[in-house]
Image (cartoon, rainbow, N blue to C red; front, side, top):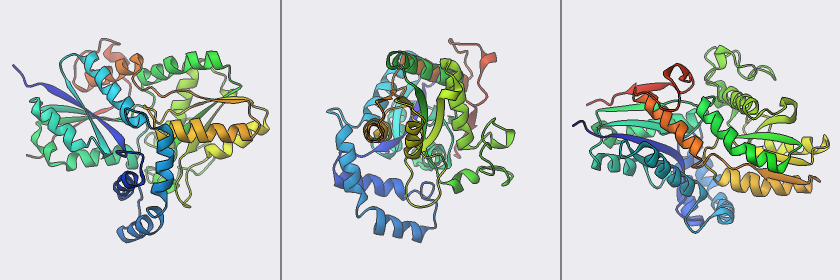
Length: 365
């Protein structure tokens, strides 16, 4: 009998509690990552210890407290629910484990769980639809840096799935009933932002990215690995799947930090522009997140709604993330099937999405 296989879901992370002490510990781990704040060690240390950590933990803790549930943070609750639903969908094997890039449960603890079940081969899925060094890149680097990773015979990874048909179908199935009930004037797609320098670094020719307002549309071969271009590609795919009028949709970027230039347009700047255009009922989707979290529930669902109402908007409806929706569970199960080279029940191998490329990485022994 062959050894069982495993699936490792990697999410960003969350504090252990909505208190300044726990948030400070989480932020120190998160923002010490050189892929997140991509500055030399000393300036990064001075910025973190001298500017960010003295004030931000208390502010962030207050934000977390607004969305915290009895079960824990939204990201952890929804990620665990998805893990359990995927396990049920896959059956007894592969074994599914959840690891956070920062905080708990850690990637190391998830690998130990897989090892305890006798797993020898792992399919790792960074749960970030659009690829970025600071998210999926950091997650995979942390995974292969773990000593436990070296004890598996093979670790496969699933890449960006920003336009995967299953991912797009999941957003269609989640958003369609909400939009039908809400009857929005406009639909905004809000993605997590990135510093411009990190996006430019993904341009292989160094002469294309952010050089013109329309550099991301349509997606050119040179921009295939550009985070911003992937975000626009997700918007276009979901707009088409929902049958929306592209003229009644927009794309923007949220969650910027610090004074360095970040990719535009900014979500909090787009809201006044939409209000001035006469939009009153605004629906917001956040497709760079597969699970609801602080950035969706608090930043958009609370602060964004307050801003919108202050601008005279009638209503702002936050469309939930994919969370553990059955279509999303089926989509990830299909990606796992492809990565393992087994036929997928949901669609034929001819429909395999180019974006969901599966790389095989074998740790050194």
